[in-house]
Structure formats: C-alpha cells, structure tokens
Amino acid sequence: MPNYNYKARDNSGKLVKGVIEAASKDEVAEKLKRMGYAPIDIAEALMGVSLEKLSKGLRRISTEEIVMFDLQLANMLNSGLSIMSSLDTLKKQVENRKLKEIIDNVARSVEGGLSLSQSFAQYPGVFSRLFISMVAAGEASGNLDQVLNRYAEFAEAQEDLRQKIRAALFYPAILIVAATLVIVFIVTFVIPKFVEIFQRAGIAMPAATILLYHLGNFIKQFWYLMILAIGLIGVGFKAYIKTTAGRIKIDRLSLKLPVIGPLVRKTCISRFARTLSTLIASGVPILQSLDIVRDVVDNEVLGQVIYQMRMAAEKGEKLSESLKVSAEFPPDTVQMISVGEESGNLEGMLNKISDFYDRAINYSIKKITTVLEPVFLVIMGAIVAFIMASMLLPMFDMIKLLRR
Image (cartoon, rainbow, N blue to C red; front, side, top):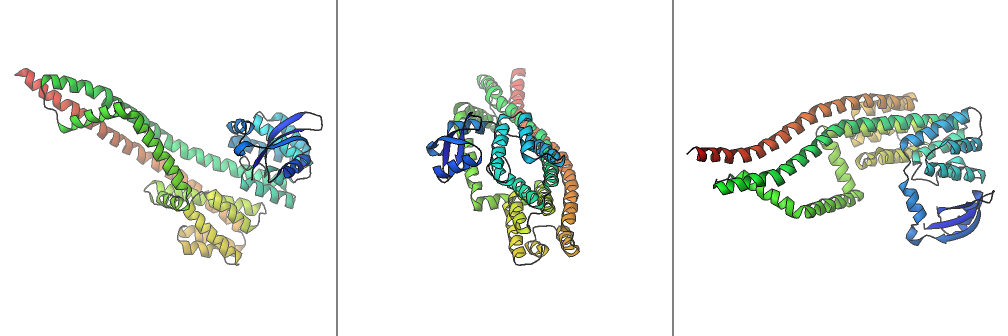
C-alpha cells in the first residue's frame, strides 16, 4: 500500500504532520478521524518516501525502551488506571521523541475506538507481531497487565541471551580486526622498506618475501578495488540470503558448523520453547502461536519444521509427532513436549525445555570462548611467524655477505 503525507489539527487546534500507510486518501481520512484529528491536507508521498518518514527512521527505539514502556504500562494497569490515563502518563515520561509520538498516536487511536492491539499494530517496525498478538490475547481474556508482564520477562530473557552471545564473540572479533590491521601495515609499509635494502645489497630473496612484497604493492595500488569487491560481495550475499533457497542453505550450514552449529541450534530451540510457552500462557490460539514462533525462531530450516507442526496441529495431530519425523529437534526435547501434551501441561514443559537450553547455551558460550581465542592466536601467530621469516631469512644472508 502507498504512504500518504498528512496535515491535521488535534482537539486543541495544534497542527500535526505525519505519514500513514493506507489504500486510499479516504482511508487515511478515516484513520485520522478515529485518532481524533481533523484532516487538513492529504497527499501521496513521492515513491512512498517522505522527509518526515526518513527523519523518523533515523531515530532508533531500543529493545530496552520497549521493555520499560511495557513494564510501566503493566504496572499502571495493575494499579487500576485506565488505558488512556496510562498512555497519557507514559507519553510525558518517555524521553525518546519517536516513541513519545508513537504513544501519543496510539492513545488517540484507542480514543478513536480502536483496541490497544490494533493501535500497536499500526507500528509493526516498533512493536513485534509477538507483542501485538499477546496484547490482543490479554484484551480478550481481561488479563492485559499479566500478559504485559509476561512479555517483559520474555523480552528481557531474549535480550540477555543476545548480549551473552555478543559478549562471547566480541573479543575474538576485536582480535581479528587488530591483527588484520597490523598485518596489512607490515605487508604494505615495513616489508617494502626491507626489500629495497635487500635489492641494493644484491641479496637473493626467498619466494615468501617476494610474494609478500607484491601483495603489499597490490594492496597499496588497488585498495579501493578491494574495498569495492568486499562491498559487492556483501551486497550479493545479503541479496542471496533474502531468497528462500539462499536462506535455507545458509541456515542449514549454520546448524552444521563445528562448535558454532550446536550453539545456533540450542539458541533456536530455546527461543522456540520460550516463545510458544509465553504465547500459550497468554491465551493466544495454538495455530496463531505457531505462526508467530516460526518467525521468531529466525532459522528457515527449523521454521519449515514448525510449519509442518502447525499443519499437523490443524489436523488435530500431536505437535511431538511432527517434531519426531523432522529429526531436527533433539529426542529429549521431543519427548518432553510429548509428555507435556499427554499431561496437559505443555506450557510448563516448554518452560523447562527453555530453562535447560538456556543453561546449555551458557556452557556452549564458555566453550566457544575457550576454543576460539587460542585458535585465533595460533592462526595469527603462524601468519606473523611467516611474515617474520620472510624478513629474517634475507637478513641472515646479508649478514653472511657482510662478514665476507
């Protein structure tokens, strides 16, 4: 659907501007009226883009801000405040201008007759499908504050897991970048100086020295082409993984990689179990829950397994049976889900699975950190040793020549 720039006035007469995605100008006008605005001007944005939208896109809303907003809203609702009073209060407290504006628009949408979940759904780039579905379930069940607290706990656990993985990979990444910069400096600036000395002295240089010398000259002369090539490879790779076939191949490879593969699989299974448990506990229907979980898992191979699980559930079959057929989930996970289905405590069993895999992820992260650091040090040490040997061997020959 196209985007429309609009100008309108609120109840106090204040001029407001923004961008709304809609099928027509009439639909935009209807949305504005539901939000409590009086439309003044509505025009289709050029190629779906406007300066207003671009400027808003530059303002980032972090996961922490969404979780804090969610917790504060849950506490206010639990204290007996109405949704409108809670949103108005939060709008005044929030520091992020973009989030403040979104909360204001959500409040106006609710005031205009939309449900809270429908109002949040107008901002899919800010509020996830999982969050919106849980809010809808909370509204239907009358336990919105409990559902919001449950989502906050879920989001905090997922963010904590992401931070642990990033922290584990941070030091090796810094080590690689620093070592690469040092090696490039030696090859492009240090080795050529020594080669000039060797050539003047008439010293025959080994193949390693000549190779590094030409490599350094190539980098100095064609560095821009190398950067361009890396950029093109990156763009091509990004385009490739956006295709279904490319995504499946990359995701399958990530599951089979030594050391990294088991961590990826454990992370996906933990995310699957925690998300499904949270959705079931919040009252979201099982078929809708599986649709959401498929997106949250963020792995196309396991996503296809979850899709088959959904098809089986739609036919009235057990979830554990389709998992067993796929062989992508470990037998213990399949068995625990089967027990949860038999006992009628699927939510509790999924939580146990997630807790177990969260602990397993912590062990895997420690193992990866323990393995990767010495491996990188050995590789970088071997490269530096090769470079030093290419410099020292001609120097020994030069010393022998001087002694004569």
